[in-house]
Image 1 (cartoon, one colour):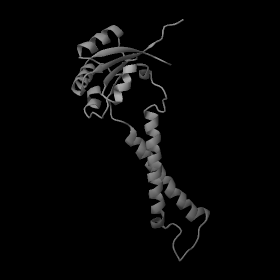
Image 2 (cartoon, rainbow, N blue to C red):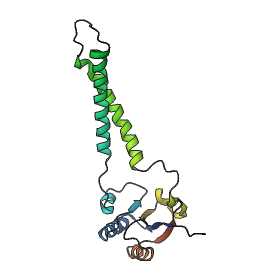
Image 3 (cartoon, rainbow, N blue to C red):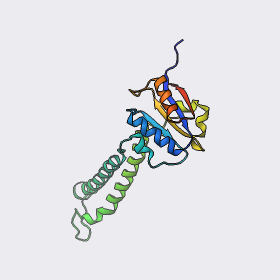
Image 4 (tube, rainbow, N blue to C red):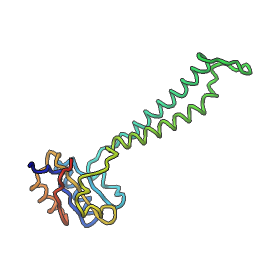
Length: 180
């Protein structure tokens, strides 16, 4: 029987400042596959972890452009090519009449792209995560401050990384087995 692979190491810290300090130190030492879990949003944490800006605004803009252009072109095609009607002497391509539907499709498609893009970029839905196997991790949404370093990180070495986390002030460090 083969031994289960490690997902990484999970460390618990006593408070927010120590978690931020540990994240900054790990980032400075070259650890890139890290993530932090806190019971409330911590503004400085993304920068301390060295996370890049999200691509969601670009995804939403793409959805908005697709929705707006397709809504306008659909109306233009119907009113000028497919089924032109002369109503009250109005020209077939009367753009002011196209604005409400174009606006609505822009908003609708942008919001759909935002939801689907967020789910896709976050790797969701994911009904189970390896960290759920650590009983103490249940406190992450109540009063726990956790930092996880994935085993896929190029700097990862179980013994060295565990020692480094303890030196940075971790209360406890767990090895997390990969469930995949």
